[in-house]
Length: 405
Image (cartoon, rainbow, N blue to C red):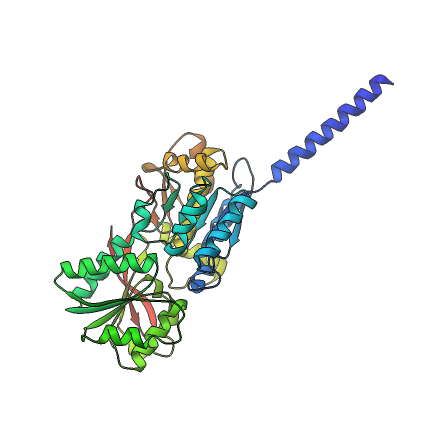
C-alpha cells in the first residue's frame, strides 16, 4: 500500500510537471507597441502597426523566439497625446510586464514616455519615427533607440531644398511640439547658411478651426514659399486649405508629417509640383524591395507614407535582441542590441529569421539588412538613414531623389 501511494504521488508530480512545462512552452514573448490609432497621427498609426504585425508573422512562421515561443504584440493607442502615451506605456511595463516597446511615433510622445516610464523602468524603447534632435542627447542610460534619422538631417535637406528651388525668403509654420520645434530650428539654420532669409517662424496649436491669423503673419513679409511642419490630422490639412482659399501662399514645401495622399484631395491642381522631405529607405540591399512584396501580399498596396518599414525594423531588431539575450529583461535586451548588430556581421534579410537564430546560436554578429535599409545604431541609439525628396505629380506622391546621412 505504501509503495502504491508513492507510485501515485510520483505520477501526480509527473503530470503536474508536464502540465507546467506545457504552459511555459506555450507562453508568448511579448513586445509592446505604442501606435496612435486616434489623434494627429492616426492616419499613420494603422499602417505602422501593420509593419510590426508583418514582422510578427515572419518571426512566428519561422519558429518564434527563445526555443519556439510565439511573438505577441500588445498595442496601446497613444492618441498622439503625451499623457495618453505615458499612461499606455505604464500599462505595458507595469501591468503587462513588457520590457521591449516599439514606439511612439511622435517625438512629443516618445520623449515623455522615455523620461517617465521606460528609462526608469529599464525597458527598451525603439521609435520608428521620432525624429526630434532632443532624442540624441536624452539621458536614457542606453534604453532608447530609433530606426529613423534625426531631424538634424531632415532639416538640412529641407533647407537645401528651399534654396535649390531658388526661394530667397521663406516662412515657416510648425506644430508646437518637440518634433515641430526641432525641425524648425534645423531648417532655419541650414536655409540661412545657404544665404536665405526666414521671414517668419510661427508655432501653431493643433486642431483649431481657423489658422488665418498664423497665415496672415507668415505671409506679411511676402516670402516666396511656406514650409509647413505638421501632421495631416492635427491642423496641417486645414492650414493648406486656408492658405489656398485666402491666397496667402501658392508655393509650399512639406515635411514628413504631411507625406500622405490626403493633403491633395480636392486641391490637386493647386499642389501640383510641390515638394517635401521625409525619411526613406536606404538605397541598395534587398530589404526595401522585399518589404514591399511581403507587405502587399499581406495587406494590399503599400501607401506612400513614411515609417511603415522602420516600424517593421524596430520590431525585428527587438526580437533579435531578445533572442541574443535569451531573456525578456530590459537590461539584457538593451545590451544585446549592440552585441548582435554589426556593420561587419553576417547578412540577414527581413525574411530570414531562421538564419538569424542560427547565427545567434553560433555566436555570430549580424548585419541586418532591414526594410528601411541596414540598421546600425551609434553609441547614442541613433541610426544612419536617408531623407527622400518627394513630389506631388497628378495628385500622387512620388520620390524624386534621396539624400544619405
